[in-house]
Image (spheres, rainbow, N blue to C red):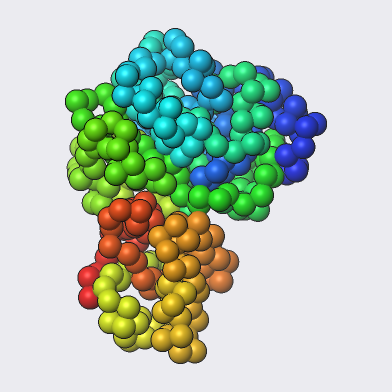
Length: 338
């Protein structure tokens, strides 16, 4: 298959909408990461997403809409969901709601709930309006790889697999949306993102965080949300994450570094001067900067042929929970407190 990568201009958006209407798959930018979209109500189109990503069929997809009116007939919208939509839509918040029979089982991995969100990106909004369809869209990467935050990343993974990539520049958030389960009594975050549990509690009154956010799924445990698998967002090289005081982490990174294994260090900008002449790359200084840079850096590590990655992390709390969730899964939960 020939793959076009086109700037997200008016004519290419029309082309993308027509492809979506005919059951094809199109990659497009959102404020979080690039998505791999197809008609959420077309079983064959949704299966084409799984095929392009080589994604396990038991991993549910998120349905993207440009207006909450599109949810009519797709799911049961609760009062709490309406309040959260008022506060954070459009934006990086996905809500799990009970689905109707109109949504095919392939889109939700057979679960009774459907994940829905309204992205805050002009290209995503324009494409969704133009095609007038609810669009199922996981991240536009090969399954298990670091998520794409630029069209170039999508090209690396999807060239020859899909007909069109819409280039809308780099994503400003850099990690996938928060997923909150609203099917139970207490809103529960299944995947952290830019909308934090505290922000949800401020609107909903309370919010829990699922234990699986910072641990692997247990044997037999289902994945009600994308991004919950054991090793996810992963570079090719094994990765270890260290958490602790800056000077102690710097000491450990210097000790662990071994040029003979083609090692690479990832650390906060402020720590780099303490790492000497070792090959080290910045994750910025704040959790938000780390989130925006993480997947880009992991892909750079692959391009460099890194044999081992040693990284500095944050305590998994507050606005650092999202980036640490991704780092933990990228490292297969090889996290050391020092």
